[in-house]
Image (cartoon, rainbow, N blue to C red; front, side):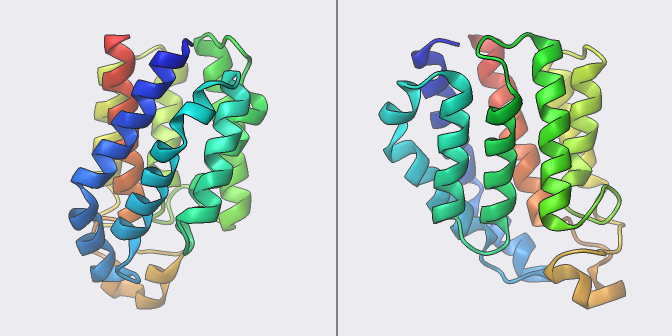
Length: 199
């Protein structure tokens, strides 16, 4: 991937999180700490600020550097989880990935996030979006189909009972609310998918 293309991906991700920060905060206020939107915005603005440094690196190293920056700047539970996602992607991604290479790396990254969060799909977390995205990618779906799968997966967290994270303390009261981490994951997937379609 060319440096200019990765720079566009960073900008798209940061723009999307900034545009939806209040929505993410509102979702998190319902069943979490209420700081998810602001934390994610701070993290991705920090990534944007150092975009020139990141895009100068090979793609795997760039992704690991983005993950490290997110761990350092997002805060809360989301920093380590989203940071782990990017760092693990970078660890297993070939320098010039094809779809199979990307799918394999995403599969490993999902395992890393699950281990870090001591969670699995079905527990009302970002994993409930990442797993369907992985499956859509592995099945050869188009970028827009993958983005749609992410949106539908985030929506599917609404009737779930939270079993991990802050929301799990609410028990049955967590039902009826979308998970903020699932929503932000879906937003990022769509931002990347739409940008990749244009590249």
